[in-house]
Amino acid sequence: MFFCLPGAPGFQSPVVHYTVSLANPASHRVHVRIEIPPGAAQRELQLPVWNALYQVRDFSQYVTWLKATDAHHRPIPSEVIDKSRWRVTDAENGAAIEYEILADQPGPYGAQLNAQHAFFNLAEILMYPVDLRSAPVRLAFSDIPAGWKIGTAMSSIDTHTFSAENYDRLVDTPLEIGTFHEAEFDDSGGHYRILVDADPPDYDLQKITGIVRRIVSAETAWMNDRPFNTYLFIYHFPRTSGGGGMEHAYSTAIDVNARVLADNALALPEVTAHEFFHLWNVKRIRPQSLEPVDYTKENYTRALWFSEGVTNTVQDYMLIRAGILDEKQYLNRLAEHIEQLQRRPAHLTQSAEEASLNAWLEKYPSYASPERSISYYNKGELLGVILDLAMRDASHGTSCLRDLLRWMNREYAQRGKFFADSDSVLQAAEAGTHANLKAFFQNYVAEKVEIPWDEFFKTVGLRLVRSTSVSPDIGFEAARIFDAPPVVISVRTDSAAQRAGLNTGDSILQINGQVASSDFQDKLSALHIGDSFRLRVRSAGVERELQWQVGSREEVELELKDVDNVTRQQKLRRAAWLKGEPEKEASR
Ligand SMILES: [Zn+2]
Image (cartoon, rainbow, N blue to C red; front, top):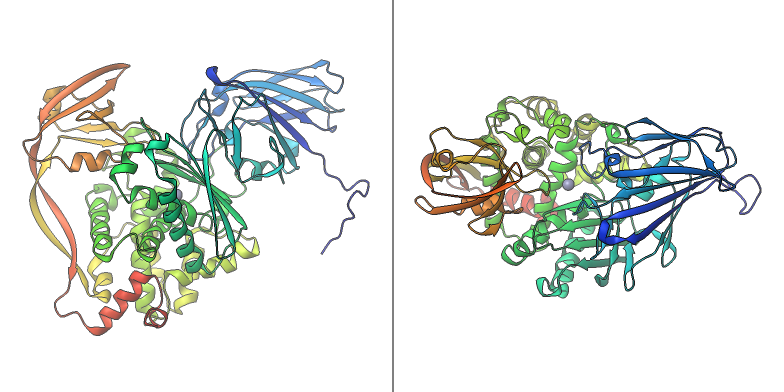
């Protein structure tokens, strides 16, 4: 242990001061002033090229101007040294760097200032002095529009001034600034805050609070851990777009389209359960490949099948434990997710680890083609399920996925260490089962071996039943890139879609008069053969309305059904699996 007397000379770290002015909400112009303490004469400032999404987005494209002054307010030279980095000189006595940046990217992955509110992922608007990335930070807001308040998980000094240990912690803490509504509750010693910025008729805060409470209670109990005192949920329910969530260590920002929120009872619980579980898996149980964050270029990781996919596995287990999803619904979802993977020819050409490395290509619509890629969310979720079943099988029901996550939480998160991608997950699985699981990881994680589903599901008395059916055929494939409108990635030759004039690259704005949002695939799969079908699309800035009739084609459908004569052992195993617990605890 190291003791440092408060106030002892020479022990105080230099502090980087940020002042962010919100004087121009209507034009989205954010004014930033960074004061850096004395140091070297030449100092560099970097604006991250990526944040929130595993995508290079070059936030410097929004910087309109930059200038610097010295400690005596005299101009000092500043120059651009690459697309996202600036250098100032004559800064030995300290300097102030000022710039203006446009912030009008909505959603949990963006930074936005407009007449209604501000929401900031700070890495998208704040540069850091390269020599002081680990120095303590002060952040103050000025010119806050009347009536607006600030909601964030950051430590506050007063209503508009905040502090963080360093730049990395600062930018892991988003802020909502506006006229939001709030709720709070305590659960098992933890304090939870919920903040909603949306049209009041679109949501019921009491109902949301009830759902959140069930989820946090299920997850903290399942992990037997609560590595925080206070946690903040920031929700937006936009009417025109939306759908997505972003995890942080002490908070999450979640968007659900207002209509999806009204129509789909699972939409809010599933994203909430997912983002909350990330506070362990990816924020604290964190792959070494994502650390330290390289703000200048991609961090390549093979672990997203685990960090994202297995978070999906746990998300659904937690919805069952919270009483939000029942067994039948769960098994139907699971079969659908297997169908999703099996229908993509790329499941035989791209492994879960390769999909993870290639995450950085997801901003390109053509990468979403079923021939090109699989989803590490989708395959990772399924790997989580069959790894759970394999662990139960290898340990005669005494060990399971829960133990793997608790083991990684102890060995890595609680010791402040990062894990070595899939190798550490294998080690954790073997630690719990005392079995050799290398072939599992080699075949299904590193390679593209076809998964023998029934080998795993028979241990819980289930099998996959295939049937072919004549299904509706809309004639095209579309993919939604993050929270943007879906984009057409292929149009089948000689289909009605092609004859109607649909083209690859068209953005889909509306389906039968309704906004195409996160549920657009559900909307498309709800269509019947012969239905008349209207699409509002935009291509090259021009909006068009297209109409045709839904055709038909043969398709394989999967269902998870009981094997003949389910044994008592299979029943016990299934009950324990769906509780997410080892058999002894589940039967208590
Ligand atoms: Zn996630």
